[in-house]
Image 1 (cartoon, rainbow, N blue to C red):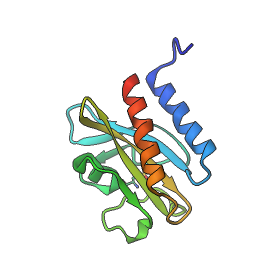
Image 2 (image 1 turned 45 degrees about the horizontal axis):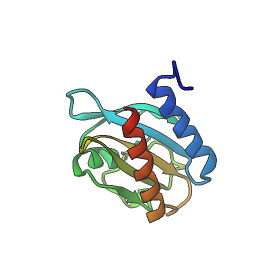
Image 3 (image 1 turned 180 degrees about the horizontal axis):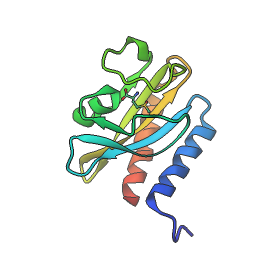
Image 4 (image 1 turned 30 degrees about the vertical axis):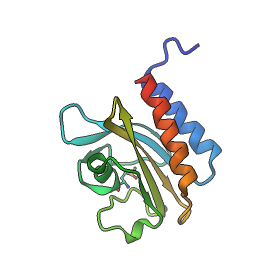
Length: 137
Ligand code: SME
C-alpha cells in the first residue's frame, strides 16, 4: 500500500492528519537529531512557514527536550525565558520526545494559537503517535 512512499512523506501525512483533526493543533512538525551534531533538524511540518529548521540542543522548548528526554507542555509561551518564537500568533506549545530503542532521537512539536489547550490526554496520545512512528524509522 505504501510502496514508494518515503518515511518523510509518511511523517508529513501524520502532521497533516493531526492538524486537520485536532482544532487547536495549528503547527505540527517532526524534528530529529542532525547526524552526530548537537542540534535538531526539522524533517517535515504542516502549518505556517518557519525559519527554525535547525535548533541547537538546549535552545528553546525543542532544544531543552532534546536534553531532558521529557515531555514539555507550555500553556503560555510568553512566560518562557528559553523559547524560540516562530509566529506571534502562537500562544502555547507541546513537545514530546521520540524514542527509538530507548534513545531520544527526535520529537514531535505542536504549536497552538489557543492559550493553554494541552492536557494529559494530548501527552498520552502524542506519546502513542511517536511510538508508532518509531516503528517505521
Ligand atoms: N518554539 C520552538 C521552536 C520551534 S517552532 O515552534 C516551529 C521552541 O521554542 O523550541
